[in-house]
Image (cartoon, rainbow, N blue to C red; front, side, top):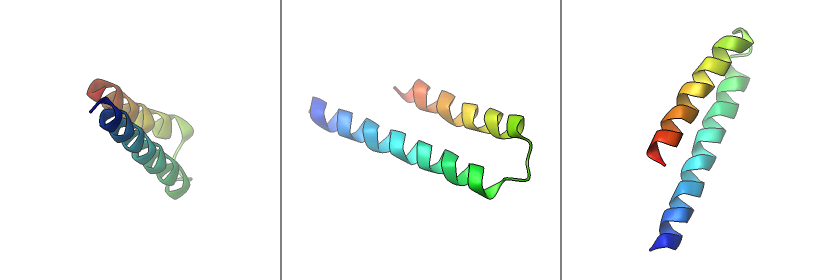
Length: 50
């Protein structure tokens, strides 16, 4: 069971990083600090789950 939790968390981590990367590519015209805050929101949510 512990192995499934680990695999699930790795997949979840990959999804969050993928969304952050695509967001970075899509919103190039935004200032870097706005993108930083958006990514921090996603990462904070991820760490709350763990």
